[in-house]
Image (cartoon, one colour):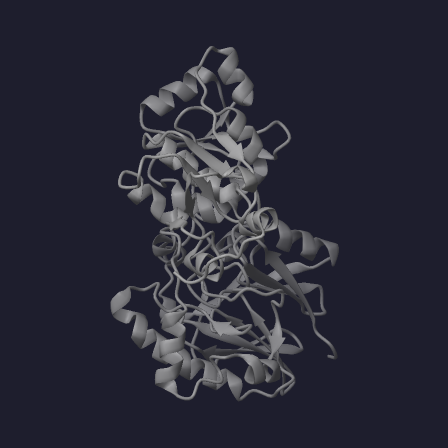
Amino acid sequence: MGTVDVVPLVDEGLGNSAYLLDLGDGRALVVDVSLDLRGARQAARRRGLAVAFAADTHLHADFVSGARQLAVTEGTRILASAAGNREFPHTGLHDGDEIDLGGLRLRALATPGHTHEHLSFLLLDGDTPVGVFTGGSLLVGAAARTDLSGPERTEHLARRQYASLRRLAVLPDEVAVWPTHGAGSFCSAPPGTRRTSTIGRERETNPLLRAADEDAFVAALLGSLGSFPPYFLRLAEVNRRGPVVLDADPALAPLDVAAVRSLLAGGAELVDVRPVPEFAAAHVPGALSIPLRPQFASWLGWLAPQDRPLVVVRSADQDPGEVAWQAAKIGYRNLAGELAGGLDAWTAAGQPTASTRLVRAGEIGAARVLDIRQAPEFAAGHLPGAAHVELGDVPGRAEELPREPTVVMCGHGERAMGAASLLERAGHRDLAVLRGGPEDWVAVTGRELATGP
């Protein structure tokens, strides 16, 4: 058949890649697509393809699978592990099973580790292996985390991950590696720009494939595990039971000020998605700041409740559909709507606002510095004397943190404003948010950053 046409569909925010494979006969296979099918459908339409197959390598914890949506709306055939016990129609595959794609074949390879039922999919042209969709098994320079099924299974799955990576590593050097998780994923992909690779390159450069033995591999993998959003613990079961099929694109219903006030009085939470400078200038007291950007879904799933209505405040130039899609793809179906007219409508109705001070690196002075980046970021370089609490831990620790003049910082300001909004809600005052990050402080002061925890 010649060179295969595989189109990566990258979700920069979640750090993942789905793939669309042109089968050469007007049909396509998609692998690990999320419920936000806009990119996959656009890529298929551009090539005049119908999506005939949707393969899921595992029960995803970081996004709602789009496979069932495709099956119901487009008649797509779902391919997935039989060991996943999915409760909706699909073709359950076991190790070694093959699917005829019409000239190409897809062979299921059991590669447990990231999850117990994980499959990789080896693409064959005749008898020649062309590439392998490795999901959360072999990643570029890493392997995906094994702790999402509970601490009691983490080491066991890490040892199974060791065997799975060795199984993949015996494939020919030229076989392409198409992983799902990449840089930016909380499923333990390292930083970097490469999202695909080859077996030969990974055998030469992946430190986990170069581990001396199984124990060394397990120690290295478990030592690399960082924190992850709490919604990861819910979505695998959502994907096993079968995600709700959407009958229309998700949207934000308009809510007037009276309706918003009533919802807030009943326990709803207000999520302000405007850029940091706008939130800093004025916002509804108690609002949670999560600026709309590629990483919005991850932080929504980390900081906002799933069991209470959410009301959105946005700028007029921000796309409400983007907010709704990002929420939907991580299983947040509790968006009550948006404040019609935005903050202008709120203030026009005589409602109160609050503000948060922004400072530059040269204006920190003697204030306490609270760095809310992830632990590896903090360890790589932080302001000397800075306190450290990861943003995801701020809600649970807001009451215990010192109530003194504090500058909250991250890498650019978006996460820091989220932390400041949580602290303000908990009664902290005299807070400021740093414009920029550690490098800006170095440029202004000429001093060196501290390293280590």
